[in-house]
Image 1 (cartoon, rainbow, N blue to C red):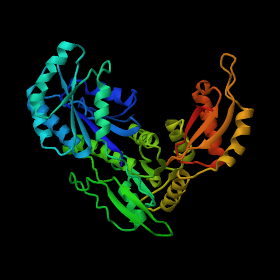
Image 2 (image 1 turned 90 degrees about the horizontal axis):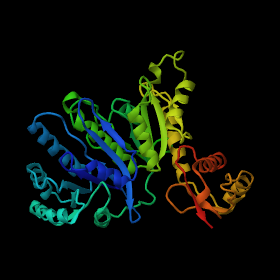
Image 3 (image 1 turned 45 degrees about the horizontal axis):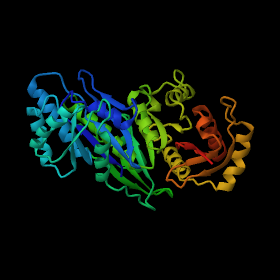
Image 4 (image 1 turned 60 degrees about the vertical axis):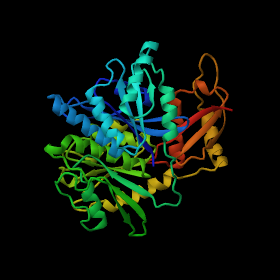
Length: 433
């Protein structure tokens, strides 16, 4: 189980800046709902060797003050439901506002750890002003400036102490998460596989808000399916349920071995599909893409080859991913989808003996070494697979700092070619011998 940290607080206190600082990059999953200035972000972070996920609960609906407060309350509730630790951001310039008090009242009842981050503290006067935040009744606070990063180290130290230990379950059944946008056919795929309507698809908000786990043991296969299909888009509930569905996919992906991404053939491979794919790749999970409803596509107008090429362009550079065209309705290739997911699971836990790895790779890197930089030549002496749950390799060289991204990609492609890691992200490190 990966820990999820939620950042809450009223608008304009600097939540997004803190979020960007924590994930150390501008790239994040953004879930925008039209007509609402609401961006919700999700990303990965690590501190002191511990990984965790960060969610910025984002903006607000434009409208009257009471709608506005209602929205903040909903977002705080969402954060409480879905996360393990909550960071409550307040603004030293404005002091405690009625809305801060409102949020604090909700958070005081929570059993999860809550850390207060007093933002915009960049001089000693402001440091003294921060004392008033004791009045929120949530205990000690941390003074930070999310713009220049001061104080964030102390906040992260405290946060990493509160992270729950990750439990790696050995000899568990492989688990496959069925993920994708609403209405792509996730439930239908699972029903086609299991042969019974056990995922009742209804339009009542919150019917199957939690992902359902199904044990599958037929045809010599034994694994767990995590179904995240419970969310239906309905205008009344769309914003929060959409975010719930993103959160559900986040959780399911973090707890699975292989993500089975179901996309709708009648729509393009869209932003949300890419986000979910990117999420699985960042989490180093196996990935299988299923193009569902292929029976509805006119074979002449849209050949498989074109459709597949288009998806591979969108997911580059990680293109070594199985893409299978299915119809959950007619059960076409549903079984092949599962066979493929099992194969990807096997690839993900594959271990290459060090001698075999060196025999295969040292010749290749000798003949096609990294380009020389400033007249300096990189010599790679030795390589090994690291003892990690997913395929990661270390190549030892005299000048690892000169190895650039394109060469890493070349090495990765060779590893894929020789040892078959289809569907699995590989991480490659160059280190000093």
